[in-house]
Length: 422
Image 1 (cartoon, rainbow, N blue to C red):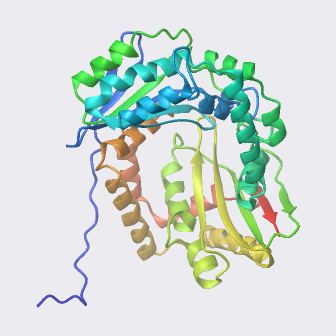
Image 2: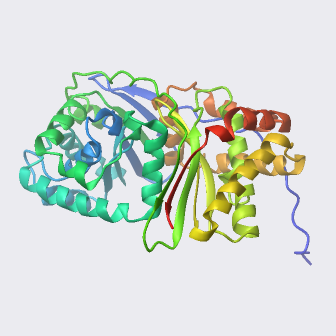
Image 3: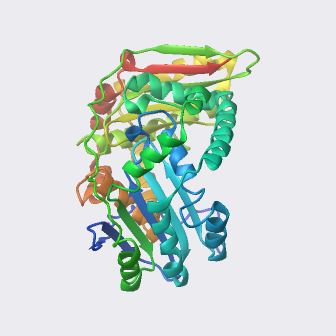
């Protein structure tokens, strides 16, 4: 009879060779990074343009352009476009982040040929009618007002503004900044980015030469005259601030603690990532055990590294009752001090190594997930073997290295603090 009281033996996860990617160039020079994996006849198409927030001259501009691109072209209304994608069973979206903007389409391979002309039309012929603009801007202003009433949203926006200052990464939208946008602002941004700068394409799923040829037939014949823009000015560290935005009637406080940090292209990034995982990067982290399990101050707390193309930052975030906010802040700092002064135990380090290796291995089973990692390598100009290095560094990492990393990159005197709420 099977003894269920005894767990099966566990074995360390071995190195997994990161899959290679096929690179295909369309007739107009657009690179296509293709991942052919899986048995189901499905695909994910991602078209990346440098139309992110950092490229816009005003806060909220990039996101508004991404929203309005879906609202009509020279040949078709918004209703006709949405009905076409729905009829073909495709999910599609256009979103902008701080660095870039992403036009993504998920669908069945048998509909690829019918879908791509719609994608090409939206890339080059979006109209941004005044009527659609007025509808969308009214919706976005109202959503923005509601978001700023949420302490977690406000804390995240204010924190980013605090650590990046006047840099484009530090901009955030408000009802006033959105109201200042015009239809011409959006159309000019669209024509100078999406419609004029050569994008980068990532195609994953069950991909054959047929899909690549169809891309070349419809996207490869489009004209894009401008190269990707040069980098922005270097991010300069801002004076450390501790900001407490008190809200009348608020019961909880949203806390953000962090600082500028190293990114994926830094040689210490791998060790810093392991250190972050120990501190607050997974459910069994020290911050979770202290502030959630022991103190009962919150339902959840986490820390993370946010890599960006021009810079990166590290942040810890949580929501607590107002009466516990100051003690929570002190407990966060206490956990950092412990990492700076004491060695991580061999048992804990092994646990985190296995967690990271297991998570990474699990992300290599689907073509869509692999494409996400290929996208990181290409957009951040990382070494092709970046994820092979990542695995090696995880396995070889020592406790002494982590203590040194904690002292070098988590200086308590450099921490910015934003608290919003009670």
